[in-house]
Amino acid sequence: MKTYRVNEIFYSVQGEGVRAGTPNVFVRLSGCNLQCAMESGPKSPGGFDCDTEFVSGRDMTADEIFEEAVRVGGKCINVIFTGGEPLLQLDAELCRKFLMWERCVETNGTIQITDQELEWVTVSPKVAEHAIRQHTASEVKYVRGYGQAIPKTRVGADHCLISPAFDGGVLLPRTVDWCVNLVKENPEWRLSLQTHKFIAAR
Image 1 (spheres, rainbow, N blue to C red):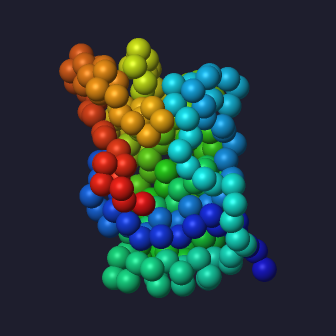
Image 2: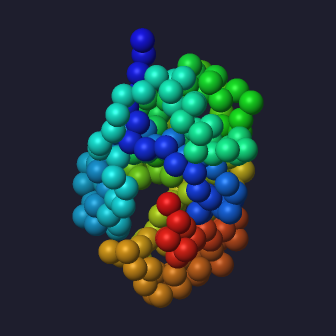
C-alpha cells in the first residue's frame, strides 16, 4: 500500500498571502529539494534562513492522512499541502481523498503540477527564474531581504506578493521599509506579512 512521509498535520490559520486569516488543516509533507540559507548557492536564493523543520516524519497512507485531517480540523474543509516541497510527494491519489475540500498547495515552483486537483496554488520561488517549472498560480510570493530587487517573475498569477524576510526570528524595520517601497514603486505587487509569526500561531 502506498504511503507518504508526513512531517506533521495540524489545524491553524493561514498566516500570509491572499488567504491570510482563514482556518486550514496543514499537511506538511517531509522533504525538500532546496536548502535556503542566508548565503546564496545552488539550492538557496540567499537572504534568509529556512525556518521549517521538514526532515523528520512518519509514513502514512492517504486514508490515514485524511482521517487525521478530519480529526484535528473538525468542521474545517480547507487543506494546505506544504513542506518542505510537497510536490515531491503530493499526487492525484492524495488530492482525491480531499475531494469535497478546498485543496491548496504551497510550492517553491521547481516541480510542475500535473494531474493533482487543486483549487489554490501558491508558488513561492526560491531559485533562479529559469529553474521554475510551475508557471501558473493563484498567487506568487517572494521573500525579500533588505536590498533585494523586485523579481521579474516567470509565474503568471492572479496575485503577486512580496514578503519581508525575518532575520533570526526578528523582522527588522529597514527590511519592512524596503519591501514597502518596492510595492509602492511597483503597484501591481502587494505586501504580505507573515502574521503567524507575530501572533505565535503554528
